Image (cartoon, rainbow, N blue to C red; front, top):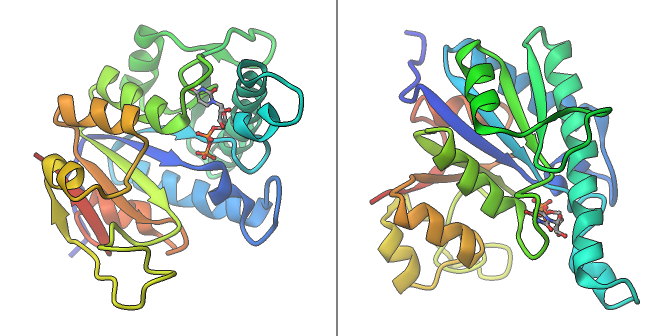
Length: 239
Ligand code: UDP
């Protein structure tokens, strides 16, 4: 039969790199459209979907901190990059026939709505996909931390972290051919084994709030809708 979702509300973290497709920089429109189609398909299963977009395909704060621009300014530039990605992703989701809204942690009313928790909850309740942009709104943080934060704030049952690989491995599978993938881990396992899932601030938030984190590959077509149905290759981190 038709796959049944196991969650009512999820947050999907889409890195900037994921939107780059085969290119070395920026937005690869066919890739953006493919990810948007998967998000729309997930939504059409009856799941409320929030998204946090990264900005690494355009700009990362640390890159410029070595080149004369101070780190905080570089980070604000990185946050602006995530807003561009958010606008592109939201437009692509809308083209799929699913309503979407961009909510930015930095106030830019001419461009998109400003993030407030009540506004985000209202959009989710009305069946709109919300795309959270500008990370946490603070320098020295990452969009992974924003993903954990927004997931907890808006009552998402899981953080779906789309990555370049299909889960968490004992070692980097691109470097070590003997690396094996975990199906399931606890938050404590990740800490004790020193596995790299998200940065420390993001992971601490997830762990303290018992937020399940599901790591899966963005390259696999339909992987988001598979994961919300408990299918597909992934590693689930849950307490
Ligand atoms: N950023 C920030 N605060 C945040 C989120 C992001 O300062 O809360 C900046 C930071 O410079 C970061 C850039 O935005 O390098 C892009 O975000 P990130 O690197 O998390 O994107 P991803 O790796 O997911 O593409």
